[in-house]
Image (cartoon, rainbow, N blue to C red; front, side, top):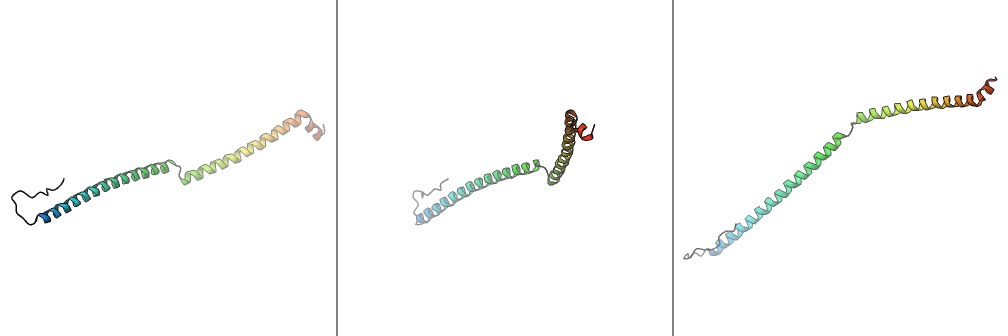
Length: 112
């Protein structure tokens, strides 16, 4: 949208240079406004992208277990570790007894 810099025919005005200056300044203002609008569009797009990233991060954080859930899970794992250690120990003792009975070592120890 350029401003009309032409002075109508038959017009004898000594302000032609002033009008040309004003038109030039209006063109500059117009281009500045256009640049500001483009910058605003870029800024809005950047803000939208940032909001999308934040939303994705919030979803990721929400999908993780809370600290309380993590502590409870660790306690369960520790309880299972103790439980299986007891089972392995008892199983090992039973296997040793069975091997001892099968080979006759236990009978020799008992004295029969």
